[in-house]
Amino acid sequence: MGPFTTERTVRFSDCDPAGIVFFPQYLVMLNGVVEDWFGDALGLPYAGLIGPRRLGLPTVRLEVDFTAISRHGDHLRWEVSLAHLGRSSFTLLHDVMGRPDQGGGVRLRARQVLVCTSLDTHRAQALPDDLRAAMQAYGARAATGASAAEGERRAP
Amino acid sequence: MGPFTTERTVRFSDCDPAGIVFFPQYLVMLNGVVEDWFGDALGLPYAGLIGPRRLGLPTVRLEVDFTAISRHGDHLRWEVSLAHLGRSSFTLLHDVMGRPDQGGGVRLRARQVLVCTSLDTHRAQALPDDLRAAMQAYGARAATGASAAEGERRAP
Amino acid sequence: MGPFTTERTVRFSDCDPAGIVFFPQYLVMLNGVVEDWFGDALGLPYAGLIGPRRLGLPTVRLEVDFTAISRHGDHLRWEVSLAHLGRSSFTLLHDVMGRPDQGGGVRLRARQVLVCTSLDTHRAQALPDDLRAAMQAYGARAATGASAAEGERRAP
Amino acid sequence: MGPFTTERTVRFSDCDPAGIVFFPQYLVMLNGVVEDWFGDALGLPYAGLIGPRRLGLPTVRLEVDFTAISRHGDHLRWEVSLAHLGRSSFTLLHDVMGRPDQGGGVRLRARQVLVCTSLDTHRAQALPDDLRAAMQAYGARAATGASAAEGERRAP
Image 1: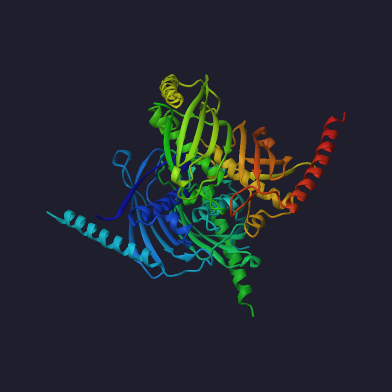
Image 2: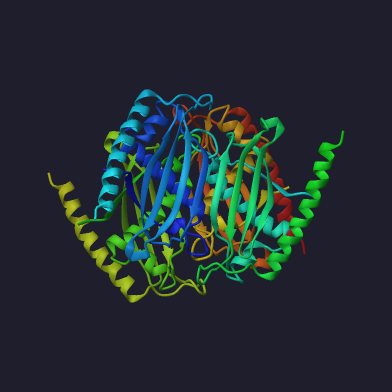
């Protein structure tokens, strides 16, 4: 299959007086995409983790390259990969591309390290077993997809 | 003198259901602090650059370590340093600390690369002379301050 | 057919430390729904009005009743009606309901007056002919739908 | 003394592609002004009510007239009056004016009804005695100030 992908449309509310996406709004989008990744790719709805189970999933490290601007009305293709899975932390890679008829191109690339915490103590804790298992299964499926895709690209 | 510092109070609107600052809101704050840095430290009000002069100052690279949580009502001390000044880009370092009576500590550290563009073409362009001169003067003053401060810390 | 409807999911970023939607975020959603109404119900994409045509569509009057809370993960059904069409202004009614399996109920009702302006002067101007015609056609279609729906509700 | 006043500067992040304040951002500001009103005018810091005491203060009704635009860099004078004090609800009036050298004028007027709830049940409850007493004292002081101010304006 390959990595999880979803789409976002750039809203009026995402844009600044320069008429382009205000960079913190990309990170609001990114957080929503991570919600979708939990629910749609892992099968564990994010709201159920935060609310009833009192798991925190704060971002502790973020690196972003904003490589091209996006304008109001642009459709973005958002791709999420799991780059690392530790005991209590994991790393996601985000690749965001414009639609070919709207200039295409990579708009941003981000590397995000999240850590699992208790919302009662805000201390790091080991990822719960179901979360870890879902991430491992996702990683395996995505890797297979990626290999297949790489195979296709390599094929003469 | 040393680096530019300002203060921010964590608002209800900055916090998430976990009761702590939602990380993209730190970046909205950061952008406002950069506005203050232009106006108060460089003497060039940000709104005057963006509006009448049609200069863009987009962030092209961002690295953030979120080292400790901040809660609603926390007072943050925000310190901005100019780490690099290029032809069209410059790099700011942000150090954000809690107030001692609210747990103190470094809350986040960020490295932000901004580039000067034309808002008409969104292409990079050389920093205008007045902006460059103001940044050079700021860098010189801050470096002197920093050395003085380091001297104080080193003094037996 | 009846009024335009769309759906929204309450995101983590929409919620406050009380764990419920922070009321200004409902209005960010509302603005996005109005964008969808222009594009999907009127056939005039909002970004094309604001950008290339330099039309402003600011809200000049807003009345909202927040009748019930919404939580992270809730699915909202958003209904938009055109209540009035003037020379340069128009009035939209928003009815926002929870999904039956998430408590249902009316979450908010809003009455929003927008005015057409020039983005160059920020002065009110008559609605352009194509916009007015699209709104009239929408009003006629929606009224037919509404009458039909009312007829159904009245039927014994 | 008269009503509580505070100031806000319009930030880049408050503005939309039309270069003016995006209306939901006025309401984010308004919420921050209400925080300041609790802390500075009533002497009851908002964060202490929400967090430790688990009081909710949701807005249940909002009416806003956006009477003039505000631009990036504008300084706004924000005035808050207590218009009504009920058993569990109270009504605030907001008058927001531009600085004379930035066009002056009323930018917006809002009427906001808030209700006191329990954050555990989200049900309305009577305002706690200390909150009610602080609001009554504020109302009395502000009314005296208003009369005095009116007297001054009427004086020949």
